[in-house]
Image (tube, rainbow, N blue to C red):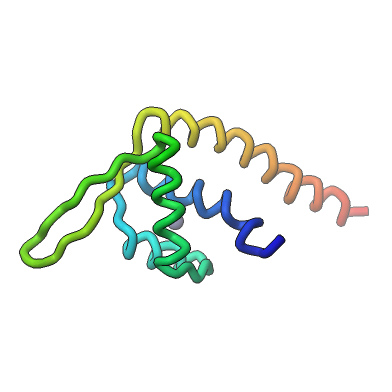
Length: 107
Ligand SMILES: [Zn+2]
């Protein structure tokens, strides 16, 4: 298993999180993820976006601004529900990863 497999879920949650705030597009998300230390190529990101769309978490449409054309992704109500459920799990994991670690290091 590569690091990519390990981070795949985190990246997908990150994508959903930002899509829940504003419509997103590929390059914008690549830049956002880079800010967080994930170096994703378009060849990795687009299949992920496509997968999230296939799952019904995102919908997309083409948007044309002058000569530029890009695919814009928006979260669906199913995507919002999935994100809410995942956040509860992340919170629990966060607790184990950090709070417990603090308790242990106090010994
Ligand atoms: Zn972010």
